[in-house]
Amino acid sequence: MEKYFKELDYKLLNKKMVYKGRRITVEELTYYNLRDNKKVHREHVLAGDAAIILAINENNEVLMVQEPRTPIGKIILSLPAGMIEPGEKSEDGAIRELEEETGYRAKNIKLLRYEYPSIGYSNERSLIFLARDLEKTHRNLDDTEDIKVVKIKLDELKKMLDTNEILDASTTIALLHYFMYEDK
Picture (cartoon, rainbow, N blue to C red):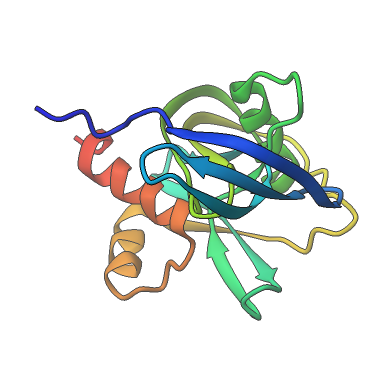
C-alpha cells in the first residue's frame, strides 16, 4: 500500500515575514521543488493550535456559541473554541476556553481528533475535544468577544447538519465524528 503522507521534498530558499498581528503571522516563502527542479512561491498564515470543544451536558445538550464572524459577514452557530497559549497543555487550553466562553468547566475532557482547516495556506491545527461532567462557573470573555451561549439537543444538531445550518468546518467535523464514533 502506498504511503499517503510523505515528507515535503522542497528545499527552503527564502523566508520573509510580511505581517505580524496579535493572532497571526504571514510569511512569504520560496522553495525549490527537488522533483521538478523549479521554484515554488508560497504565502503562509501561521496561527498555531486551536481547541474546539464539543461540550455535552447531562441533558444531552451541546453548549454552542453564537457569534459574529466578520470575514463572512454573518452571525453563526459553532462550538466554543480558542487558541491554545504557548506552553499550555492542549487539554488545559480547551478547559480554559470552554469556561471563558460559556461559563462551564469540564471535569472530564478527551481529545477526539485533530484537523487542519486550511492547509493550502495555514498551519493552524484544530484539536477537537469532547467535554463532559460540566460544572457551572462564570464566563470570562475577552474585550472583543460578542458571544451568546445556546444549548441545543444532540438530535436537533443532527437535523441542523442535514439542512446545512452548521457552517463552521471544525464544528461540522466534531459533530460528524461524535455521531459516527462516540454516540453508541
